Image 1 (cartoon, rainbow, N blue to C red):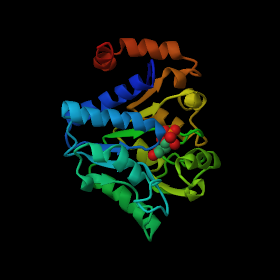
Image 2: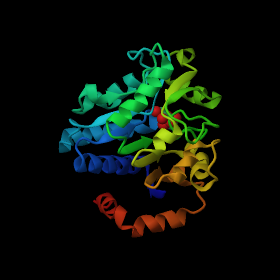
Image 3: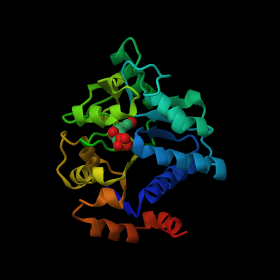
Image 4: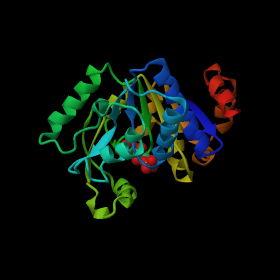
Amino acid sequence: MEIAIRPDTEAACSLVAAIIAKAVRAKPDLVLGLATGRTMERLYARLAEMHRDEGLDFSRCRTFNLDEYIGLPVEHPGSYRYYMNQNLFNHINIDPANTFLPDGMAADIKAGCAAYEDKIAGCGGIDLQLLGIGADGHIGFNEPLSALRSRTRDKTLAEPTVKVNSTLFDNPDDMPRRAITMGVGTILDARSAVLLATGKSKAGIIAQAVEGPVTSMVTASALQFHPRCRVILDEDAATELRHQDYYRWVFEQDPDWAEYRAAAQG
Ligand code: F6R
């Protein structure tokens, strides 16, 4: 795991956008794993700006989202398909036919989950998986006790998740209690992963995920097994990390971060 602590949310989002842009430029038909949620909104706005102002080209990319609610039609403003169209896809030159989310309206959910795994494999696997982290440590919707080798499947959402996410619905009771999510194992199969977390409310769970034991009670902790996982934080989300000085030292020294350090300094 590599940790980058940036001065504020804007700088953290810019760093993640720069990582994604570099990957897209290096491999124009990149297979990109995407996340939804409040944290990603500024990042997606930044990617849309990079498309508009710098010609960042998504025309050959394929995308797979981590999760989708069960039972919400895609045109429902609470659905993740709707979120992705509004926040990213409508603002870049991606081919909508190359954007995939789990089908929360499938008549046969289990078959749909297996088909999603097959589709990812058929595209050659995910090159770069973007992740957020939930208050209970979930990645995707892998709630506490999700098997660390799990694959795409349906899950019941934990109460804290329902509490936080239902505020995004006009009518909080509309929020489904179940969702389809890539599994922890599916996520760990990605060739690289980038987790973005911002704000004080994430500080405690980030410390558990990064410095605590690997446990299915905090599924983000499984990222400690990933050979190429970067965790990008703003100062607020980093406040409870015990070894901040070490992470800052590595960020300043490591050649892998050199181009991003230079970009940050303008
Ligand atoms: C959503 C997802 C979730 C979110 C997490 C954080 O696709 O995968 O794991 O990343 O719930 O959400 P926010 O950013 O709203 O705090």
